[in-house]
Amino acid sequence: MTLQSSQGAAPRPRRNGVGRSWGWWDGWTVGALVIAGLAVLPILAVILIAFTPGDDIWSHLASTVLPGYIVTTLELMAGVGAGTLLIGVSAAWLVTMCRFPGRRIFEWAMLLPMAMPAYVIAYVYTDLLEFAGPLQAMLREMFGWSSKRDYWFPEIRSTGGAMAMLTLVLYPYVYLLARAAFLEQSVGVLEASRSLGRGPWRSFFTVALPMARPGIVIGISFALMETLNDFGTVDFFAVNTFTQGIFDVWMNMNNIAGAAQLATVLLLFVAVIVLSERYARRKQRFHNTTSKYQPLPAYRLRGGIALLATGFCTVVVTLGFLLPTFVLLAYARQYFDPVLALEISAHAANSVQLSALAGVIAMLVAIVVAYSVRIKGGPLLRAVGRMAGFGYAVPGAVLAVGVMVTLGQVDNRLDGFMRDSFGISTGLLFSGTIAAVTFGYLVRFLALSLGTVEAGLGKITPSMDGASRNLGRGALATMYRVHLPLMRGSVLTAVLLVFVDCMKELPMTIILRPFNFQTLATFVHQYASDEQLGEAALAALSIVAVGILPVIILSLVIARSRPGAGAAMGGDH
Image (cartoon, rainbow, N blue to C red; front, side):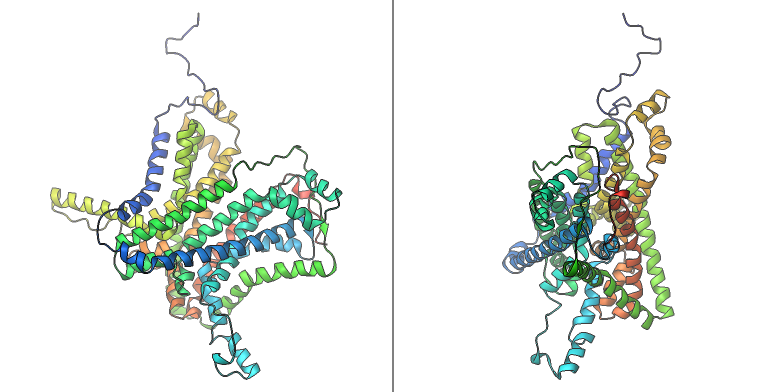
Protein backbone atom coordinates (compact mmCIF):
# COMPACT_ATOMS: atom_id res chain seq x y z
CA MET A 1 0.00 0.00 0.00
CA THR A 2 1.34 3.39 -0.99
CA LEU A 3 1.09 6.18 1.55
CA GLN A 4 -0.22 9.51 0.29
CA SER A 5 -0.21 12.84 2.07
CA SER A 6 -3.36 14.83 2.59
CA GLN A 7 -2.09 17.39 0.09
CA GLY A 8 -2.18 14.94 -2.81
CA ALA A 9 0.24 12.62 -4.55
CA ALA A 10 3.75 13.69 -5.34
CA PRO A 11 4.40 14.81 -8.91
CA ARG A 12 5.31 11.99 -11.19
CA PRO A 13 8.73 12.54 -12.76
CA ARG A 14 9.32 11.94 -16.42
CA ARG A 15 11.63 9.07 -17.20
CA ASN A 16 13.28 10.53 -20.27
CA GLY A 17 14.48 14.08 -20.75
CA VAL A 18 14.02 16.93 -18.35
CA GLY A 19 10.42 16.21 -17.59
CA ARG A 20 6.81 17.08 -18.14
CA SER A 21 6.32 17.79 -14.47
CA TRP A 22 5.50 21.44 -15.13
CA GLY A 23 2.46 20.50 -17.21
CA TRP A 24 2.01 20.28 -20.96
CA TRP A 25 -0.30 23.10 -22.03
CA ASP A 26 1.31 25.86 -20.04
CA GLY A 27 2.59 29.28 -21.06
CA TRP A 28 5.85 27.89 -22.48
CA THR A 29 4.10 25.56 -24.90
CA VAL A 30 1.51 28.10 -25.96
CA GLY A 31 4.20 30.75 -26.37
CA ALA A 32 6.31 28.49 -28.58
CA LEU A 33 3.30 27.62 -30.75
CA VAL A 34 2.31 31.29 -31.13
CA ILE A 35 5.88 32.29 -32.03
CA ALA A 36 6.15 29.56 -34.66
CA GLY A 37 2.79 30.57 -36.10
CA LEU A 38 3.82 34.22 -36.37
CA ALA A 39 7.15 33.21 -37.94
CA VAL A 40 5.54 31.26 -40.78
CA LEU A 41 2.59 33.63 -41.24
CA PRO A 42 4.37 35.94 -43.74
CA ILE A 43 5.39 32.94 -45.84
CA LEU A 44 1.85 31.58 -45.86
CA ALA A 45 0.56 35.06 -46.75
CA VAL A 46 2.82 35.17 -49.82
CA ILE A 47 1.58 31.79 -51.03
CA LEU A 48 -2.05 32.75 -50.39
CA ILE A 49 -1.77 36.03 -52.33
CA ALA A 50 0.01 34.24 -55.17
CA PHE A 51 -2.91 31.84 -55.65
CA THR A 52 -5.66 34.39 -55.06
CA PRO A 53 -7.51 35.35 -58.28
CA GLY A 54 -6.69 38.90 -59.32
CA ASP A 55 -4.99 40.76 -62.13
CA ASP A 56 -3.87 38.30 -64.77
CA ILE A 57 -0.21 39.29 -64.70
CA TRP A 58 1.21 35.79 -64.28
CA SER A 59 0.75 34.85 -67.94
CA HIS A 60 2.52 38.07 -68.92
CA LEU A 61 5.42 37.39 -66.53
CA ALA A 62 5.69 33.76 -67.64
CA SER A 63 5.88 34.71 -71.31
CA THR A 64 8.33 37.59 -70.90
CA VAL A 65 10.66 37.88 -67.90
CA LEU A 66 10.19 34.63 -65.95
CA PRO A 67 12.45 32.42 -68.14
CA GLY A 68 15.20 35.02 -67.88
CA TYR A 69 14.83 35.22 -64.10
CA ILE A 70 15.11 31.43 -63.84
CA VAL A 71 18.17 31.13 -66.09
CA THR A 72 20.03 34.06 -64.53
CA THR A 73 19.29 32.93 -60.98
CA LEU A 74 20.49 29.38 -61.74
CA GLU A 75 23.66 30.72 -63.39
CA LEU A 76 24.39 32.94 -60.41
CA MET A 77 23.81 30.12 -57.94
CA ALA A 78 26.02 27.72 -59.91
CA GLY A 79 28.86 30.23 -60.13
CA VAL A 80 28.71 31.22 -56.46
CA GLY A 81 28.36 27.61 -55.35
CA ALA A 82 31.43 26.53 -57.32
CA GLY A 83 33.47 29.54 -56.24
CA THR A 84 32.69 29.26 -52.54
CA LEU A 85 33.36 25.51 -52.64
CA LEU A 86 36.77 25.94 -54.27
CA ILE A 87 37.98 28.81 -52.09
CA GLY A 88 36.35 27.78 -48.81
CA VAL A 89 37.43 24.14 -48.78
CA SER A 90 40.95 24.82 -50.09
CA ALA A 91 41.59 27.54 -47.52
CA ALA A 92 40.14 25.43 -44.69
CA TRP A 93 42.39 22.48 -45.54
CA LEU A 94 45.50 24.65 -45.86
CA VAL A 95 45.18 26.49 -42.54
CA THR A 96 44.06 23.37 -40.63
CA MET A 97 46.31 20.60 -41.91
CA CYS A 98 49.30 22.37 -43.46
CA ARG A 99 52.12 24.52 -42.13
CA PHE A 100 53.24 27.51 -44.20
CA PRO A 101 54.26 31.12 -43.54
CA GLY A 102 51.42 33.21 -42.15
CA ARG A 103 49.11 30.29 -41.36
CA ARG A 104 48.20 31.53 -37.88
CA ILE A 105 47.16 34.91 -39.26
CA PHE A 106 45.09 33.39 -42.04
CA GLU A 107 43.20 31.16 -39.57
CA TRP A 108 41.11 34.18 -38.57
CA ALA A 109 41.83 36.54 -41.47
CA MET A 110 40.05 34.24 -43.93
CA LEU A 111 36.82 35.10 -42.09
CA LEU A 112 37.19 38.88 -42.52
CA PRO A 113 35.29 39.09 -45.86
CA MET A 114 32.20 37.93 -43.96
CA ALA A 115 32.08 41.43 -42.45
CA MET A 116 31.87 43.03 -45.92
CA PRO A 117 28.32 43.20 -47.35
CA ALA A 118 28.16 42.04 -50.97
CA TYR A 119 26.61 45.29 -52.16
CA VAL A 120 29.45 47.33 -50.61
CA ILE A 121 32.16 45.32 -52.33
CA ALA A 122 30.21 45.57 -55.59
CA TYR A 123 30.17 49.38 -55.37
CA VAL A 124 33.92 49.50 -54.65
CA TYR A 125 35.02 47.21 -57.48
CA THR A 126 32.72 48.89 -59.97
CA ASP A 127 34.34 52.20 -59.11
CA LEU A 128 37.80 50.66 -59.55
CA LEU A 129 37.23 48.53 -62.66
CA GLU A 130 34.71 50.39 -64.83
CA PHE A 131 35.80 52.24 -67.99
CA ALA A 132 36.28 55.56 -66.17
CA GLY A 133 37.95 53.88 -63.20
CA PRO A 134 41.64 54.19 -62.27
CA LEU A 135 42.71 50.74 -63.54
CA GLN A 136 41.42 51.11 -67.09
CA ALA A 137 42.56 54.73 -67.20
CA MET A 138 46.08 53.61 -66.27
CA LEU A 139 46.05 50.89 -68.94
CA ARG A 140 44.94 53.35 -71.62
CA GLU A 141 47.69 55.75 -70.65
CA MET A 142 50.36 53.03 -70.57
CA PHE A 143 49.50 51.47 -73.95
CA GLY A 144 48.17 54.50 -75.78
CA TRP A 145 44.62 53.17 -76.14
CA SER A 146 42.05 55.82 -76.84
CA SER A 147 38.70 54.02 -76.61
CA LYS A 148 37.13 50.75 -75.50
CA ARG A 149 37.34 49.43 -79.07
CA ASP A 150 41.13 49.29 -78.76
CA TYR A 151 41.21 46.65 -76.02
CA TRP A 152 39.13 44.07 -74.16
CA PHE A 153 38.41 44.33 -70.46
CA PRO A 154 35.97 42.15 -68.49
CA GLU A 155 32.65 43.86 -67.75
CA ILE A 156 32.20 44.15 -64.01
CA ARG A 157 28.47 44.91 -64.27
CA SER A 158 27.48 41.45 -65.46
CA THR A 159 26.39 38.07 -64.16
CA GLY A 160 30.04 37.02 -63.95
CA GLY A 161 30.85 40.15 -61.97
CA ALA A 162 28.01 39.43 -59.56
CA MET A 163 29.31 35.86 -59.16
CA ALA A 164 32.77 37.17 -58.27
CA MET A 165 31.49 39.74 -55.77
CA LEU A 166 29.21 37.28 -53.98
CA THR A 167 31.89 34.56 -53.95
CA LEU A 168 34.43 36.88 -52.31
CA VAL A 169 32.14 37.60 -49.34
CA LEU A 170 30.26 34.28 -49.05
CA TYR A 171 33.11 31.74 -49.16
CA PRO A 172 33.63 32.16 -45.35
CA TYR A 173 30.41 30.17 -44.81
CA VAL A 174 32.05 27.15 -46.46
CA TYR A 175 35.45 27.89 -44.92
CA LEU A 176 33.97 28.11 -41.42
CA LEU A 177 32.11 24.80 -41.53
CA ALA A 178 34.78 22.95 -43.52
CA ARG A 179 37.49 23.98 -41.06
CA ALA A 180 35.33 22.95 -38.11
CA ALA A 181 34.81 19.58 -39.81
CA PHE A 182 38.55 19.13 -40.43
CA LEU A 183 39.36 20.05 -36.82
CA GLU A 184 36.95 17.40 -35.53
CA GLN A 185 38.26 14.56 -37.69
CA SER A 186 39.90 11.50 -36.24
CA VAL A 187 43.68 11.60 -36.08
CA GLY A 188 43.79 7.81 -36.39
CA VAL A 189 42.14 7.81 -39.81
CA LEU A 190 44.42 10.55 -41.11
CA GLU A 191 47.52 8.82 -39.76
CA ALA A 192 46.43 5.57 -41.37
CA SER A 193 46.21 7.35 -44.70
CA ARG A 194 49.63 8.83 -44.15
CA SER A 195 51.15 5.46 -43.21
CA LEU A 196 49.87 4.05 -46.50
CA GLY A 197 52.07 6.52 -48.35
CA ARG A 198 49.45 9.12 -49.20
CA GLY A 199 50.58 12.71 -49.15
CA PRO A 200 48.51 15.71 -48.06
CA TRP A 201 46.58 16.07 -51.33
CA ARG A 202 45.68 12.37 -51.71
CA SER A 203 44.67 12.22 -48.05
CA PHE A 204 42.57 15.33 -48.61
CA PHE A 205 40.62 13.94 -51.58
CA THR A 206 40.22 10.34 -50.39
CA VAL A 207 39.81 10.73 -46.60
CA ALA A 208 39.33 14.24 -45.23
CA LEU A 209 37.01 15.61 -47.92
CA PRO A 210 34.45 12.77 -47.78
CA MET A 211 34.40 12.96 -43.96
CA ALA A 212 33.84 16.74 -44.05
CA ARG A 213 31.12 16.52 -46.69
CA PRO A 214 28.13 17.21 -44.37
CA GLY A 215 29.62 20.46 -43.09
CA ILE A 216 30.68 21.56 -46.57
CA VAL A 217 27.20 20.94 -47.96
CA ILE A 218 25.64 23.04 -45.20
CA GLY A 219 28.11 25.86 -45.87
CA ILE A 220 27.32 25.88 -49.59
CA SER A 221 23.60 25.87 -48.78
CA PHE A 222 24.04 28.97 -46.61
CA ALA A 223 26.00 30.69 -49.40
CA LEU A 224 23.30 29.87 -51.97
CA MET A 225 20.52 31.15 -49.73
CA GLU A 226 22.42 34.39 -49.23
CA THR A 227 22.83 34.58 -53.00
CA LEU A 228 19.07 34.34 -53.45
CA ASN A 229 18.61 37.02 -50.79
CA ASP A 230 21.01 39.51 -52.40
CA PHE A 231 19.47 42.63 -53.91
CA GLY A 232 22.07 45.39 -53.76
CA THR A 233 24.62 43.63 -55.97
CA VAL A 234 22.24 42.34 -58.64
CA ASP A 235 20.36 45.64 -58.75
CA PHE A 236 23.56 47.66 -59.14
CA PHE A 237 24.87 45.28 -61.82
CA ALA A 238 21.46 45.10 -63.57
CA VAL A 239 21.39 41.30 -63.24
CA ASN A 240 17.79 40.14 -63.54
CA THR A 241 17.34 37.62 -60.73
CA PHE A 242 14.13 36.76 -58.89
CA THR A 243 14.88 39.20 -56.08
CA GLN A 244 15.38 42.06 -58.51
CA GLY A 245 12.21 40.98 -60.33
CA ILE A 246 10.15 41.09 -57.13
CA PHE A 247 11.23 44.68 -56.56
CA ASP A 248 10.51 45.61 -60.16
CA VAL A 249 7.01 44.12 -60.22
CA TRP A 250 6.08 45.56 -56.83
CA MET A 251 7.71 48.99 -56.94
CA ASN A 252 7.54 49.83 -60.64
CA MET A 253 4.42 47.92 -61.74
CA ASN A 254 2.65 48.43 -58.38
CA ASN A 255 1.38 44.84 -58.50
CA ILE A 256 1.68 42.99 -55.20
CA ALA A 257 0.02 39.84 -56.58
CA GLY A 258 2.67 39.55 -59.31
CA ALA A 259 5.41 40.10 -56.72
CA ALA A 260 3.89 37.37 -54.55
CA GLN A 261 3.78 34.99 -57.51
CA LEU A 262 7.47 35.57 -58.25
CA ALA A 263 8.21 35.20 -54.54
CA THR A 264 6.42 31.85 -54.51
CA VAL A 265 8.60 30.59 -57.36
CA LEU A 266 11.64 31.81 -55.44
CA LEU A 267 10.42 29.82 -52.44
CA LEU A 268 10.63 26.72 -54.64
CA PHE A 269 14.33 27.45 -55.18
CA VAL A 270 14.80 27.69 -51.40
CA ALA A 271 12.92 24.42 -50.88
CA VAL A 272 15.13 22.69 -53.44
CA ILE A 273 18.27 23.94 -51.66
CA VAL A 274 17.04 22.81 -48.24
CA LEU A 275 15.89 19.40 -49.46
CA SER A 276 19.07 18.89 -51.48
CA GLU A 277 21.18 19.68 -48.44
CA ARG A 278 19.28 17.17 -46.32
CA TYR A 279 19.38 14.56 -49.08
CA ALA A 280 23.14 15.05 -49.48
CA ARG A 281 23.60 14.40 -45.74
CA ARG A 282 21.33 11.37 -45.58
CA LYS A 283 22.91 8.51 -43.65
CA GLN A 284 26.14 10.52 -43.44
CA ARG A 285 27.35 9.81 -39.92
CA PHE A 286 30.93 9.97 -38.72
CA HIS A 287 31.90 9.17 -35.15
CA ASN A 288 35.21 9.29 -33.35
CA THR A 289 36.12 5.89 -31.95
CA THR A 290 38.24 7.30 -29.14
CA SER A 291 37.88 10.04 -26.55
CA LYS A 292 41.60 10.85 -26.76
CA TYR A 293 42.38 13.92 -28.84
CA GLN A 294 45.87 14.27 -30.26
CA PRO A 295 47.48 17.01 -32.31
CA LEU A 296 46.40 16.93 -35.94
CA PRO A 297 49.05 15.71 -38.42
CA ALA A 298 50.99 18.66 -39.80
CA TYR A 299 51.89 18.63 -43.51
CA ARG A 300 54.85 20.97 -43.71
CA LEU A 301 54.87 22.85 -47.01
CA ARG A 302 58.21 23.97 -48.37
CA GLY A 303 59.62 26.09 -51.16
CA GLY A 304 57.32 27.12 -53.96
CA ILE A 305 54.33 25.19 -52.59
CA ALA A 306 54.52 27.11 -49.31
CA LEU A 307 54.72 30.41 -51.20
CA LEU A 308 51.71 29.42 -53.31
CA ALA A 309 49.69 28.64 -50.17
CA THR A 310 50.62 31.98 -48.61
CA GLY A 311 49.92 33.79 -51.87
CA PHE A 312 46.52 32.13 -52.32
CA CYS A 313 45.32 33.11 -48.85
CA THR A 314 46.76 36.62 -49.19
CA VAL A 315 45.00 37.25 -52.51
CA VAL A 316 41.64 36.03 -51.21
CA VAL A 317 41.76 38.15 -48.04
CA THR A 318 43.05 41.18 -49.96
CA LEU A 319 40.36 41.04 -52.63
CA GLY A 320 37.56 40.19 -50.20
CA PHE A 321 38.39 42.61 -47.39
CA LEU A 322 41.65 44.57 -47.34
CA LEU A 323 41.44 46.31 -50.73
CA PRO A 324 37.76 47.38 -50.41
CA THR A 325 38.44 48.60 -46.86
CA PHE A 326 41.44 50.70 -47.92
CA VAL A 327 39.46 52.19 -50.82
CA LEU A 328 36.58 53.08 -48.50
CA LEU A 329 38.99 54.64 -45.99
CA ALA A 330 40.57 56.75 -48.73
CA TYR A 331 37.17 57.87 -50.01
CA ALA A 332 35.89 58.62 -46.50
CA ARG A 333 38.87 60.89 -45.88
CA GLN A 334 38.70 62.57 -49.29
CA TYR A 335 34.95 63.20 -49.28
CA PHE A 336 34.47 63.91 -45.58
CA ASP A 337 31.79 66.53 -45.00
CA PRO A 338 30.74 67.51 -41.45
CA VAL A 339 27.15 68.10 -42.54
CA LEU A 340 26.95 64.75 -44.28
CA ALA A 341 28.63 63.10 -41.29
CA LEU A 342 25.84 64.39 -39.04
CA GLU A 343 23.27 62.94 -41.45
CA ILE A 344 25.09 59.61 -41.45
CA SER A 345 25.17 59.61 -37.64
CA ALA A 346 21.38 60.01 -37.60
CA HIS A 347 21.02 57.08 -40.00
CA ALA A 348 23.46 55.10 -37.85
CA ALA A 349 21.27 55.79 -34.81
CA ASN A 350 18.26 54.44 -36.74
CA SER A 351 20.22 51.30 -37.67
CA VAL A 352 21.48 50.73 -34.13
CA GLN A 353 18.05 51.22 -32.56
CA LEU A 354 16.30 48.92 -35.03
CA SER A 355 19.00 46.24 -34.89
CA ALA A 356 19.28 46.33 -31.09
CA LEU A 357 15.50 46.10 -30.71
CA ALA A 358 15.31 43.17 -33.11
CA GLY A 359 18.28 41.47 -31.41
CA VAL A 360 16.81 41.70 -27.92
CA ILE A 361 13.35 40.56 -29.02
CA ALA A 362 14.86 37.69 -31.03
CA MET A 363 16.85 36.61 -27.97
CA LEU A 364 13.79 36.64 -25.70
CA VAL A 365 11.69 34.79 -28.26
CA ALA A 366 14.46 32.23 -28.80
CA ILE A 367 14.64 31.57 -25.06
CA VAL A 368 10.90 30.86 -24.96
CA VAL A 369 11.07 28.43 -27.89
CA ALA A 370 14.30 26.69 -26.89
CA TYR A 371 13.34 26.38 -23.22
CA SER A 372 9.90 24.99 -24.04
CA VAL A 373 11.56 22.33 -26.19
CA ARG A 374 13.96 21.55 -23.34
CA ILE A 375 11.39 21.12 -20.56
CA LYS A 376 8.72 19.44 -22.72
CA GLY A 377 10.48 17.66 -25.55
CA GLY A 378 8.49 15.59 -27.98
CA PRO A 379 8.21 15.71 -31.78
CA LEU A 380 5.61 18.51 -31.80
CA LEU A 381 7.73 21.10 -30.03
CA ARG A 382 10.86 20.05 -31.90
CA ALA A 383 8.96 20.64 -35.13
CA VAL A 384 7.80 23.99 -33.73
CA GLY A 385 11.42 24.94 -33.10
CA ARG A 386 12.34 24.15 -36.70
CA MET A 387 9.34 26.11 -37.99
CA ALA A 388 10.31 29.17 -35.95
CA GLY A 389 13.73 29.26 -37.59
CA PHE A 390 12.61 28.62 -41.17
CA GLY A 391 12.57 32.34 -42.00
CA TYR A 392 16.38 32.43 -42.30
CA ALA A 393 16.12 30.24 -45.39
CA VAL A 394 13.69 32.66 -47.05
CA PRO A 395 15.03 35.68 -48.98
CA GLY A 396 14.35 39.05 -47.40
CA ALA A 397 12.36 40.30 -50.39
CA VAL A 398 9.95 37.36 -50.08
CA LEU A 399 9.47 37.89 -46.35
CA ALA A 400 8.97 41.62 -46.91
CA VAL A 401 6.05 40.88 -49.25
CA GLY A 402 4.50 38.58 -46.64
CA VAL A 403 5.05 41.03 -43.78
CA MET A 404 3.44 43.89 -45.71
CA VAL A 405 0.43 41.75 -46.64
CA THR A 406 0.01 40.42 -43.09
CA LEU A 407 0.41 43.71 -41.23
CA GLY A 408 -1.62 45.54 -43.87
CA GLN A 409 -4.55 43.25 -43.14
CA VAL A 410 -4.12 43.86 -39.41
CA ASP A 411 -4.07 47.62 -39.94
CA ASN A 412 -7.15 47.55 -42.18
CA ARG A 413 -9.19 45.43 -39.79
CA LEU A 414 -8.16 47.47 -36.76
CA ASP A 415 -8.93 50.73 -38.55
CA GLY A 416 -12.34 49.41 -39.64
CA PHE A 417 -13.17 48.31 -36.12
CA MET A 418 -12.19 51.68 -34.62
CA ARG A 419 -14.15 53.57 -37.26
CA ASP A 420 -17.28 51.49 -36.70
CA SER A 421 -17.02 51.50 -32.90
CA PHE A 422 -15.60 54.92 -32.04
CA GLY A 423 -15.50 56.90 -35.26
CA ILE A 424 -11.70 57.11 -35.06
CA SER A 425 -9.24 56.21 -37.83
CA THR A 426 -6.08 54.54 -36.55
CA GLY A 427 -4.27 54.67 -39.89
CA LEU A 428 -1.18 52.51 -40.39
CA LEU A 429 -0.06 51.48 -36.93
CA PHE A 430 2.05 48.51 -38.05
CA SER A 431 2.67 48.33 -41.79
CA GLY A 432 3.74 51.97 -41.99
CA THR A 433 6.07 52.06 -38.99
CA ILE A 434 9.27 50.50 -37.69
CA ALA A 435 7.11 47.71 -36.27
CA ALA A 436 7.02 46.19 -39.77
CA VAL A 437 10.82 46.34 -40.10
CA THR A 438 11.32 44.86 -36.64
CA PHE A 439 8.86 42.04 -37.32
CA GLY A 440 10.57 41.29 -40.62
CA TYR A 441 14.00 41.22 -38.98
CA LEU A 442 12.67 38.94 -36.27
CA VAL A 443 11.21 36.42 -38.71
CA ARG A 444 14.30 36.43 -40.91
CA PHE A 445 17.01 36.19 -38.25
CA LEU A 446 15.30 34.28 -35.44
CA ALA A 447 17.15 31.14 -36.51
CA LEU A 448 20.51 32.72 -35.59
CA SER A 449 19.34 33.55 -32.08
CA LEU A 450 17.51 30.25 -31.67
CA GLY A 451 20.51 28.16 -32.68
CA THR A 452 22.82 30.02 -30.31
CA VAL A 453 20.43 29.76 -27.36
CA GLU A 454 19.80 26.06 -28.04
CA ALA A 455 23.55 25.44 -28.09
CA GLY A 456 23.92 27.24 -24.75
CA LEU A 457 21.07 25.27 -23.16
CA GLY A 458 22.47 22.02 -24.52
CA LYS A 459 25.65 22.47 -22.47
CA ILE A 460 23.68 22.56 -19.19
CA THR A 461 23.11 19.13 -17.71
CA PRO A 462 19.41 18.16 -17.24
CA SER A 463 20.18 17.18 -13.64
CA MET A 464 20.22 20.87 -12.75
CA ASP A 465 16.58 21.14 -13.80
CA GLY A 466 15.69 18.28 -11.49
CA ALA A 467 17.67 19.76 -8.61
CA SER A 468 15.92 23.11 -9.04
CA ARG A 469 12.51 21.43 -9.14
CA ASN A 470 13.29 19.50 -5.96
CA LEU A 471 13.98 22.84 -4.30
CA GLY A 472 10.47 23.94 -5.19
CA ARG A 473 11.25 26.23 -8.12
CA GLY A 474 9.02 26.30 -11.17
CA ALA A 475 10.07 26.47 -14.81
CA LEU A 476 10.35 30.26 -14.93
CA ALA A 477 12.34 30.51 -11.69
CA THR A 478 14.65 27.72 -12.86
CA MET A 479 15.29 29.44 -16.14
CA TYR A 480 15.94 32.79 -14.45
CA ARG A 481 18.07 31.57 -11.53
CA VAL A 482 19.85 28.56 -13.05
CA HIS A 483 19.96 28.61 -16.84
CA LEU A 484 20.38 32.30 -17.69
CA PRO A 485 23.48 32.80 -15.48
CA LEU A 486 25.10 29.70 -17.01
CA MET A 487 24.31 30.66 -20.61
CA ARG A 488 24.99 34.39 -20.34
CA GLY A 489 27.64 34.19 -23.06
CA SER A 490 25.29 32.42 -25.47
CA VAL A 491 22.54 34.96 -24.82
CA LEU A 492 24.85 37.89 -25.56
CA THR A 493 26.14 36.15 -28.68
CA ALA A 494 22.57 35.60 -29.87
CA VAL A 495 21.81 39.32 -29.54
CA LEU A 496 25.06 40.26 -31.28
CA LEU A 497 24.61 37.97 -34.29
CA VAL A 498 21.08 39.22 -34.96
CA PHE A 499 22.20 42.82 -34.41
CA VAL A 500 24.99 42.59 -36.98
CA ASP A 501 22.87 40.90 -39.66
CA CYS A 502 20.11 43.48 -39.19
CA MET A 503 22.66 46.27 -39.67
CA LYS A 504 23.60 44.81 -43.08
CA GLU A 505 20.11 43.79 -44.25
CA LEU A 506 19.11 45.70 -47.40
CA PRO A 507 16.18 44.26 -49.43
CA MET A 508 13.80 43.88 -46.49
CA THR A 509 14.70 47.31 -45.11
CA ILE A 510 14.08 49.03 -48.45
CA ILE A 511 10.57 47.57 -48.70
CA LEU A 512 9.43 47.80 -45.07
CA ARG A 513 10.98 51.04 -43.81
CA PRO A 514 8.68 53.98 -43.09
CA PHE A 515 8.61 56.93 -45.46
CA ASN A 516 11.67 59.20 -45.09
CA PHE A 517 13.36 56.67 -42.79
CA GLN A 518 16.95 55.73 -43.64
CA THR A 519 19.37 53.19 -42.22
CA LEU A 520 23.06 52.88 -43.01
CA ALA A 521 22.34 50.11 -45.53
CA THR A 522 19.66 52.05 -47.43
CA PHE A 523 21.79 55.23 -47.34
CA VAL A 524 24.80 53.43 -48.84
CA HIS A 525 22.62 51.81 -51.51
CA GLN A 526 21.00 55.11 -52.46
CA TYR A 527 24.24 57.09 -52.79
CA ALA A 528 26.23 54.31 -54.47
CA SER A 529 23.42 53.74 -56.99
CA ASP A 530 23.70 57.45 -57.84
CA GLU A 531 27.46 56.98 -58.47
CA GLN A 532 28.35 58.78 -55.22
CA LEU A 533 30.41 56.12 -53.52
CA GLY A 534 32.71 58.70 -51.92
CA GLU A 535 29.83 60.25 -50.00
CA ALA A 536 28.64 56.78 -48.92
CA ALA A 537 32.09 55.52 -47.86
CA LEU A 538 31.82 56.56 -44.20
CA ALA A 539 28.46 54.81 -43.80
CA ALA A 540 29.78 51.70 -45.57
CA LEU A 541 32.78 51.59 -43.24
CA SER A 542 30.44 51.77 -40.26
CA ILE A 543 28.59 48.67 -41.48
CA VAL A 544 31.88 46.84 -42.05
CA ALA A 545 33.19 47.79 -38.60
CA VAL A 546 30.10 46.36 -36.93
CA GLY A 547 30.39 43.20 -39.05
CA ILE A 548 33.86 42.46 -37.67
CA LEU A 549 32.41 41.62 -34.24
CA PRO A 550 30.96 38.21 -35.19
CA VAL A 551 34.12 37.43 -37.12
CA ILE A 552 36.09 37.67 -33.88
CA ILE A 553 33.58 35.43 -32.10
CA LEU A 554 33.53 32.85 -34.90
CA SER A 555 37.33 32.71 -35.11
CA LEU A 556 37.52 31.99 -31.38
CA VAL A 557 34.79 29.35 -31.60
CA ILE A 558 36.35 27.34 -34.41
CA ALA A 559 39.82 27.60 -32.84
CA ARG A 560 38.44 25.93 -29.70
CA SER A 561 36.16 23.47 -31.46
CA ARG A 562 38.62 20.59 -31.02
CA PRO A 563 39.30 19.42 -27.45
CA GLY A 564 42.94 19.81 -26.61
CA ALA A 565 43.36 22.40 -29.34
CA GLY A 566 45.70 24.47 -27.27
CA ALA A 567 48.47 21.92 -27.70
CA ALA A 568 47.34 20.61 -31.03
CA MET A 569 48.58 23.15 -33.47
CA GLY A 570 52.15 23.75 -34.32
CA GLY A 571 53.89 26.84 -35.59
CA ASP A 572 53.60 28.55 -38.92
CA HIS A 573 56.56 26.82 -40.45
